[in-house]
Image (cartoon, helix red, strand yellow):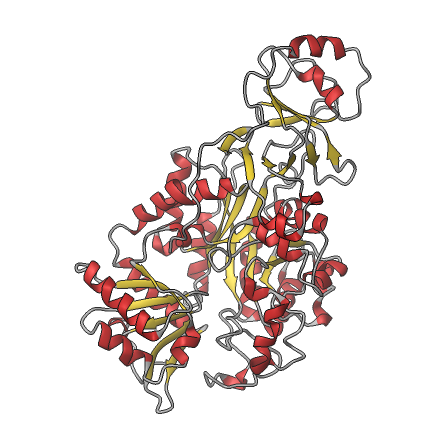
Length: 582
């Protein structure tokens, strides 16, 4: 599911001096060595240092995300650690004959961005053979499927991505029959753009052993028409299980995943100023864990990566818990950590599978009570928390509906020892009665607002399903912050763009659920570092922390909402090393 972005050009932005800028630095350092030092001109141990720095950045608008000193002019780095944050004058003592001095020319520097919820292997790999535009017509859908069949004559499964489920539901003919007409002799599976349903043909159903007498799996629904015949749409975990079959048919899936990371995903994320990510759905039965480990073993990571191991709803709990425990790793010396587990408690609104307190206004799937579904019930989630939290795992819990969110909070309240940093992600329909529970329980609120569909202008689209009252204040980031929740902002790429500047721009303009710019930046940096358990290392620019830094082409605080969305990164550093330079 590769998304195309602008290529990375090795252009040096005028005004940013990257080398040869220290010709007079040794004299300047000696002249200023006797000047009064600020409290920031110290080593991590608190003692003044005259040993010099490997890199010094001067003349910047440096936003530190540190409340005690939010702005600075200069930063000094010794190898990978920040040893000074302060003024141009006082940084001179850190400049030696071998120091690389970079004049920021007034540009803004800030901590590297964290994205604590994305799908980098799935979104950056060429595992799928074709993509269907969301807004295309049925005729276009079929033409693209037929073309894919011609272009991939030896593929055991035809695997696609991108359609809009609304188009399928509005077809005059059965979606199953339409896809059978296009490709009758090979299995076809097409993931809907939210990943919460799959469109399949009869051959795929046959290979998956699904028929009219089949029972819905845990966390999923087998789509049927009014006569109870299968209609070719598999919702949530029903589709996930068939996609597992399709992916296992690919002989080169892991190599494609690896190349996608190396050649596309990591360079693109670094270009966007992202230095830390959480893979929010590491399918360990598909070899995702091995792919990440290969990249780490080859010393090719240009990001700090925390993996969220997928919890399979249909798997035996005791077996799965044992397996997950065996994967845990959190070596402080490695950029790769396997220390999170990803759970779904519910589905999504547009499928009527998000778990709601009250029934949907339309009944599409004949679910009990018409209140959505559970991948994991509250009781099962409590069981996993009690079993895995002592090993060090943090939980990343998909929760969209008000009932799903309430049950996930209940599970954490009942089962957690309070020492882990669990988070609920998406948070589309939140019961106001639960707003203050995030802070009380220490649960992180993770939201995505980079996608246009989360904008308040789209809220009325949910009225036919939810009614007017429940369609207001979707993704209520302002209300959560006002109730002292620790908020993180992430992308859920490729459901939404990973560009953090789009997310920031939207976060500060989505009235009545908008937050301030400083709150949005904290959500993308220090709060997200906290969610990853690394706020003592990164997430703000402070003495003693690691040098994960980005330089921007404009000062966000002097920019309009539109200008913020159009911001470009000039340079990205990970651990003091330049991993992207424009």
